[in-house]
Length: 501
Image (cartoon, rainbow, N blue to C red; front, side, top):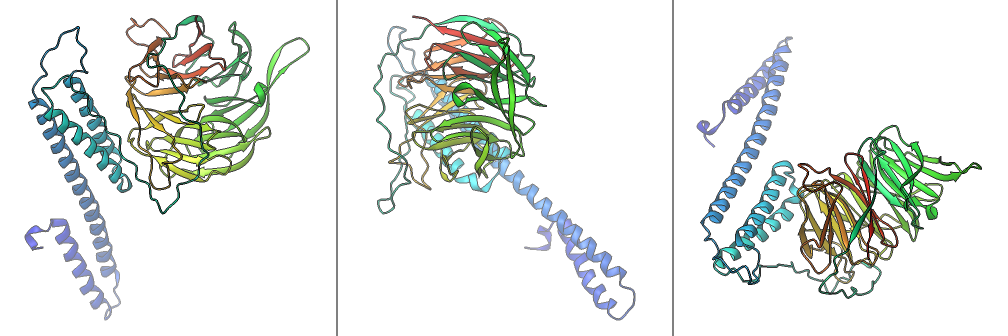
């Protein structure tokens, strides 16, 4: 590299370093040693400035290349011919332009992720996502004049090393058969509750289906009679907003998690005058960040918590002894789900990666690939075969938890992606018969999904859909018999629907 290619800061650094060396040599024969020390300090300062400048220029070049690539892809999309018109009576695939827009939106998600998470360990995953998008775009370009052609569906192959046995997970039953034409459920509005003063972050129904518990950012925990909506008792549960709630011990015990970094265990009691109250039993303080989510495992009987401190902790009930703790280096944990049949815990959060842990020990099993968007909610079907993740970009990704294909170092890819909501998917829950997935989004809609359909089979809102802005859905729960669906919103409203005939 010649002198003309050096920046003035680099030249100054070399000059000062040279002067410092000369000054040190001269200082050996003179009592004055302040000058070489000062020059050396200046040289080190210039060295630091040069390093920051080099990093800045490197990031600038990277973002410039990303923008250039984005512009080239946009130009290719604009050059594609419009699909010929078709008759309204003839069945057709979705318009090509809509498909292209969805591809572009997916690319935007990749670019946005790069702009905010320039992490070396995620480059390989992002490159795979980009290659997939490029392949879809090339396919659409080649078949632009074939509107009735089936869209490209790519399921990444998962290779199996014959010499290395897969990670052992319990075998599960085969996928249950479902009707190709799902019956659309009829949900009738039962009643609405407006007692909470802030967002209803979590909801739970007791195992016997009689009681509804609600937890809110207003710091309160409330207990209701599910059939009538009668408020039985209220307690200020935490010093800050309550984020998570779950029933335990057959419905006699409850656990809450909060912004205040604690988990509290509560006992439901009735006095002689038939007055209800919630008595605090224990306060668990092992977390160092807000407790974002709580889930109960029936076998073994454990309370599982996920926190902003990047840990998944397992607690032995009824006393709440800490059994094990797992640290997720990928980032904050916003959602967890437990599958007792597979002895597995799934956790996910800001990094977008879904990690699997062994129930009871906390040992890592592996992770699920194919997602770069932050995860807000998780759900596992009761048969343990399907995991759903609700993302901040409004999509729901589905993985099949196949123990014969999953092994350490070779993560599973999604089997399906649903474009579910306009905004974050804040809540997910599977029905107990695994035939329905219910999602709640920041757009204010509750949508019901069937395993054989890519479009929602039904949609509900807490208020009239014609209103200019619907309140975001924050939490969902289903009664064990599937007869009641309950949703909590950002404005503090709780709405209950009863399943019609």
